[in-house]
Image (cartoon, rainbow, N blue to C red; front, side, top):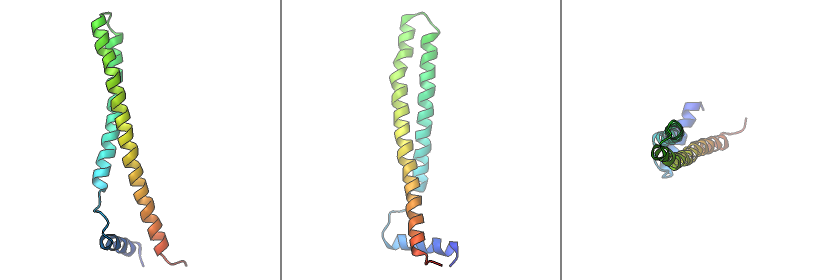
Length: 107
């Protein structure tokens, strides 16, 4: 049995078992979105620092400092999305590999 035959057999078995449809594309998109939120949080934090550090006007400094909690929130939300969906992708791959190894007879 070749690799592609085993892959087709695994897909057929999953469909017949009533497994949910492939959500790989959505998971990748949300992983990338989480990564973008983390980077965005860092950029907002740097912008807030630049705004508050380059002026002596207390009102402008307060505007820059108020970006801090927004940046932390964005970064934590992005981290949570990234970890959740990247772990989902890894565990899905691990489970498919485990099923394929157990269904293959020993040589």
